[in-house]
Image (cartoon, rainbow, N blue to C red):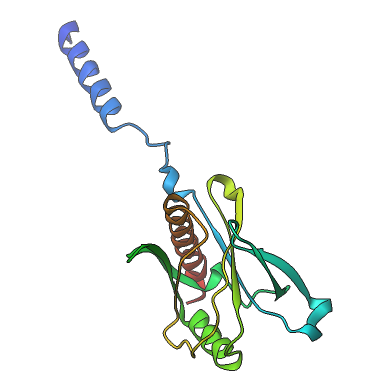
Amino acid sequence: MITGRGRFNLYLLLALVALSACGCRTHKNDKNKQFATLRIHLEAGPQDTGRSVQIPIYRASPYQLQIQNEPFITELQVASAKVVDVIGGFDLQIQLNREGTWLLQQYSANNRGKRFALFTQFGEKVKEARWLAAPDFSRTMTDGLLQFAPDASREEADQIALGLNNAAKKNDADLKWLK
């Protein structure tokens, strides 16, 4: 059996072109690697000195706020996050999952008039850390939606939202085996 060298080389060349075109995708999207944390702490009363800490809120013109050490909501209760345009700037909008909605409703109903402080770590390798805001519980929050003007640039707010969304997807994937 005689096979032409030209035909064999043509097949080899076509196979190499097909392999290089399809290739193996080892490069992953860096946007899926970004994560962010979220910790929401309740304002502490004067009697909570052993379980509280003072923190600075707003970098440009900081004021001190006494908060409880333990957060009552974390990124585990975040369903989604996005940056929304508002008159005069932008807000960070965080939708909580069912557990987070229940916690927010309970804390907002029982602590009307108190503040809650939002802390995040974000960016590449979660190296940035910041207290974002300290709004107050002016009403009972039943919809699980937090919307506030963060102490961050638009780019940083986008990174926080992306990181929280990636963390929410990972948390959902990790919890699927329980369902």
